Amino acid sequence: MRLTLLTALLLPAAMVAQQLSTAPATVKPTNASGQGAINWLSLEQAQQLSKRDGKPIMVDVYTSWCGPCKMLTSKTFTDKQLSDYVNKNYHAVKFDAEGPDAVKFNGQSYTNPEYRPEMKGMRNGTHQLTMQIAPVNGRVAYPTVVYLDADGKVLAPVQGYLTPEQMEPILIYFGEGVHKGQEYQSWYPTFKSRRN
Image 1: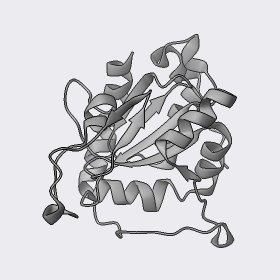
Image 2: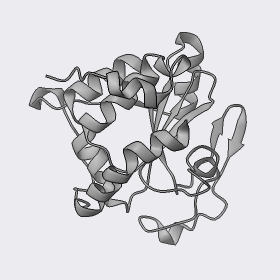
Image 3: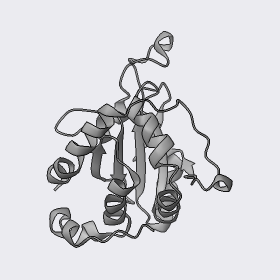
Image 4: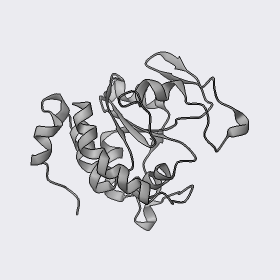
């Protein structure tokens, strides 16, 4: 299921991302301007909350040098309808795929032993957690949005830049538990956007 979902959604998105990778480095959205704001948590916080309320976890696996990652942050994650949906139905995490910080996930510690401080802001060593949750067919690409269930099981890593319209069906599929009873390929043709 993961491979077919990824193939169906990511090839067009990857081609768009290659063409549009010139987003600003940081964006601080506010609801006052009509933009949305996702409530980002640490992975440990998200897992604690998810165990209590059963919501899935959405992890944005990004790097500081990645143009499509910046686009996802500035264009997709600031979309009010998308951010409202994520805040209501997920616990959201931003995870620096090449960062130096140790992190606990499913009771295990992960580090980045290949991190080089002098390379901060440039390509750096890949964090162990990135390799645990984000590969598709053994390869990591940025950005990757990883969907986890409440027990911390990887449901699907989705690689590449997606617009709010492209991400909406995936968010609904995992956020509303459709994946528990139906394959994405059979469900997607029946999907109707809720965007106004």
